[in-house]
Amino acid sequence: MADLVATINGWAWGPVMLVLLLGTGLYLSLGLHFMTVRRIPAAMRLMLQGRQGRGEGDISPFSALMTSLSATIGTGNIAGVATAVALGGPGALFWMWITALVGMATKYAEAVCAVHFREQDEQGNYSGGPMYYIRNGLHRRWHWLGIAFAVFGGLAGFGLANTVQSNSVSQVLQDAFSVPPLATGLVLMALVGAVVLGGIRRIASVASFLVPIMALSYVLMSLVVILVNMEEVPGAVATIVEAAFTGTAAAGGFAGATVWAALRFGVARGIFSNEAGLGSAPIAHAAARTDQPVQQGMIAMLGTFIDTLIVCTMTGLVIVIMDVWPTGVSGASLTSMAFAQAFPGGEYVVTLGLCLFAFTTMIGWSFYGERCVVFLFGTHAILPFRVAWVLAIPVGTVVELNLVWLIADTLNAFMAIPNLIALILLGPLVFRLTRDYWSNPLIAH
Image (cartoon, rainbow, N blue to C red; front, side, top):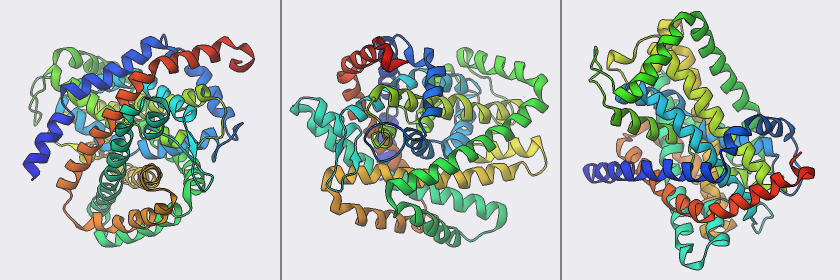
């Protein structure tokens, strides 16, 4: 069973998927004339102005961004970056940057479509995302893709964003402080349950408070390491860029990596971290109080910018500057080793960061899974889903999750396929809505 899933996973995240993800992002970037890169300052202003929002919706535009970031800023930023560098060499970080630059266009298009095609459920709450813009924006022959996305999304969350996250937290707390895994699971269950059972408004308020604090704290601690070792930064950046195009020779415990390995692991881990193209983030952005899909799209694209170009870059630079990547160690342990070498007790930064990032991932993804379930079964399935989500958390801390991780990672890739097909087909609509917005000076300015 494990071998079969591993084979499917290798195919799902293989060259075809990476080309599809990057290709869709490039197609949208070209169609938008790289507006997503040129308009970053304007998007920043919109984000800061979006504390309340104007129009119909459940949460503010800023809260929608924080909810999507709560799900994306997670173990991928600490363990995912380290894994990419450990397997693909420092050059993997360069390809993460490229993935993020084209991924901003993907995330923008997702949110524009999500707001444009969203619906209200029987309880009056807003629902949107790939399953809705497939159903409401594409011909009936494509509707089965919306159902497929909802099935994959509802199932993938229980692995990637629930049991695997609680397992990661229990492991780091057991290693650092000898906390019994089940105790961690029960505490997490209580904390996540208190938020999730309150619905999107409570999730958004907790995310709006926690995400800026934890992201800024992690970035500041990383900046301290970078500034103290400032003379190493130019060499580290040169190493990253050079390795992206020449590969990395074997050194220490590092087995060496080709350009293809750097590209493959950089793109795969970059997408895993910022989720551009997976179709998860637009589910949160569809709930925003706004009557302007383009404005919400601009706020949404900042999620990829913040997640990968800021937070992941901090992790990658610390690992390369502290020169721990050739040790053969991987994952969160590699990041922990880098911070521990940087200053006494540095490993606890990683431990605390992992715990907070995993917690917010669990609450953010619970909303994604819930909206997928509402699409499939209606609002009466909300409470059973929330209860099942909370009860699954302690289970993740006490069972072996390698197979669960593989299955969930594969389902994650399968989520992307219906979403990317929809974005390619709806690309002309996104381009038209964007042109109309910027051609109206009263709205755009």
